[in-house]
Image (cartoon, rainbow, N blue to C red; front, side, top):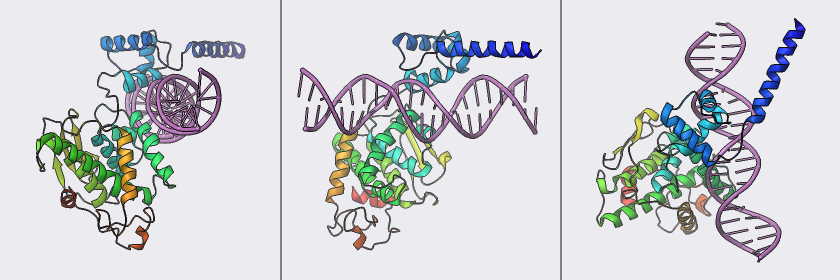
Length: 293
DNA sequence: AACTGTTCCAACCGCCTCGGG
DNA sequence: GCCCGAGGCGGTTGGAACAGT
C-alpha cells in the first residue's frame, strides 16, 4: 500500500515537474498574444488555468490573466498619464495608500500595474530626491501644496488657451480637467487627514465623461465614468514637463514672496518655511483654488 | 563608438481571500 | 469546519531602452 502511494506520489510529482518544465516564462510572443486574444474573443475570459490549457498556451493561468488585463485588453490605455490622471492618482493615493487596484478603478483604461509603476518611478523618485519618505508629512505637503496645485494650474491654462475664455465650474469645455483637479486639490487640502466630511461637490458633463466627487467621502462617493477626453483635459502632459514645473515651483517658493504658498507650513521642506510659523490648518478651499486661477 | 549608469515597465512572486466540495 | 483551487492584490525584479560620459 505504502509502495503504491509512494509510486503515485512520485508519478504526480514527476508530472508536475514535467508540466512545470513545459511552462513558458518571460516576455510574451506575438503568437501567444494572438492565441490568447482569439481564445478570449471566442470563449470569454475567466477560469484562467483552464483557459490557458484549452487555448494551448504553455503559460500559467495567472500569467494569462495578467497579460490580458495589463496589456491585451482592448480598452487598455497606453502612453503618458494625462495631468488629470496624475492628479487623480495623487489624490486617491492620499486617501487610500497603495490600493492600486482600487485607484485603477477610477482611471478608466489604466491598470493597477501601470499606476503602481508610475508611483514608484515618478512619485517615489521625488521623495528620494527630497530625502524623505513618500508617506511622510513633508512629502504629502509637497504634493498638496506644490505639485497638485501646479497640475491644476497647467490644466486650467491649457483649457483656457483651448477655449479662449475664462472657465467656470460646470463649464463643459474645461470641466473635465480643471474641475476635477480643483476637486482633487481641495480634497487634499481641505481634508488633510482624509477623514473630514465632504465639503464640495463637482460634476463633469457626460460629453467628456462624468465625474461626481463628494470630497473626502469614501469610494462610494467618487465615480469616474466614460471616456477620457484629452482635448478638454488639456491633453497629454509628459511627466517630465510636470517634473520640471514641480521643481521650478520648488525653487521659486519663498516664505515672504507674497506667492500662493506663503501661508502653508511645509515643515522644513522649503527652505525658510519653518520660520513662517503659519498654521497647517490654514488650508485652501475650492473657492481659493479658483481665486488662484 | 564603446562603455556605464539610469529609467521604465512587463512580468513574476508570494500572500491573501473567497467560494465550492 | 476544513481543504483546495482560482483569482486578486501589492511588492519586487530583470532587462530593454535611453542618456550621459
